[in-house]
Image 1 (cartoon, rainbow, N blue to C red):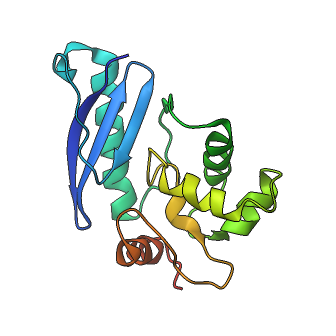
Image 2: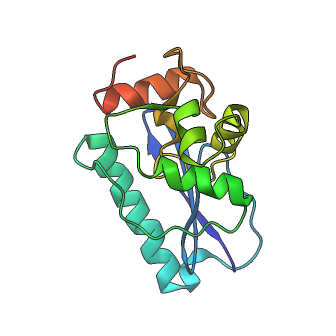
Length: 160
């Protein structure tokens, strides 16, 4: 599989979107390094990149509550993929805790591992790891920083 990348400029900084022929493979604040031909070479990849870009615009404008685009997750352990699947179920405007996610994946003692899986989430925002907070209510850990996490939650109408 060959991934391609575009940039999305938001008030939170540049967000990089990568896709391959199966869907969006990365969305985050770190530019990815890919070799190979330009993404314009495959219409499916262009479609996924454009859809992700458009859906991000809608999300930041407050009109999109749930993303609807195919995802292509090839990396990650089985546990990480279970955690990411649970994150997809957290509704817009709501939060859950790391311990709640650990319970839902059947590993109640794996709270730190859930935090680690969140940190390795390859498709931020679409897989909404920003909606996970500490049991104490504290905004702990986010790849783009706690201020960005708080701003994203505020955008969704959640004030911590």
